[in-house]
Length: 356
Image (cartoon, rainbow, N blue to C red):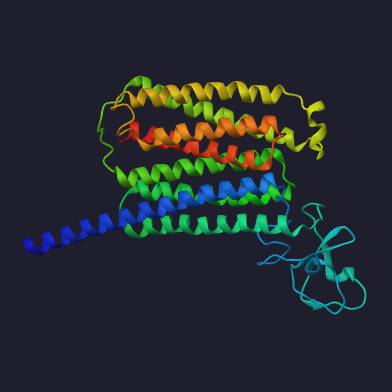
């Protein structure tokens, strides 16, 4: 009897360990795909592809978007399906039901699109936005998998609560994605969309940390100075990211002809962003040096320290390139993605130092 109980206990423990490892792996994959969404979303923003799909969640009413303008242009004796969209006379139209068109365009078969009046097609923009949405959908599958696994295994209340919050946040993020499209890329909604992505990154790091450190025991001494510096760097990063969105909104409003930017750019917002950047740089370097001092210089220091230093280099370099060459798209993308990597590294380091 005792032997059976012991075997059952061992089996339960093995199941617990295996399921926890699987949960951690799924969380890491979801985190990787979340960063891919940030990268793809940044690419969409920098290339002006945000309205490549004028509806949501489909693209021109299709699960697979058009590859040529002829696919969304009205034609005679053409089969149209309900909810399919086309551009006719500079207006978006939505098919009411399935039908085959006749000689003339019959408005009885169509409803004009009510969400907005943007009616342009660019195959590059369409597929850039579509790929961005596909990455988001794949990430959503992993997020749903995390929640289902937490319900099935019932290993930890932390896992269940965290994955539930994550699922809700991801649903909110999907809804915000639709709102951004319906508002024709409203800057405020884009900013909220990005900050929700930051919260999702934080929740995923917490879930990964929980599965690796369920007992939350302190493993080494941390000074109050390092804890204070970590909080300070996180606050600086959040403020800097916010002002970065303001700079981006300002750049979006400038004329498409970059040759005349130098005579039109007002540097007030940019100057604030640059001023805060100095604070970000100083506090992060001071943080890394303080942590390294607790080890044999950088030997055995947390990998986040190196990641913070590397991303700082990318941020400074891309910032200089943007100011010197009128904000080239690639530099903007590197700058945005580096900011997310920096924040994620800081937050993960914060968890390791305070809850490990």
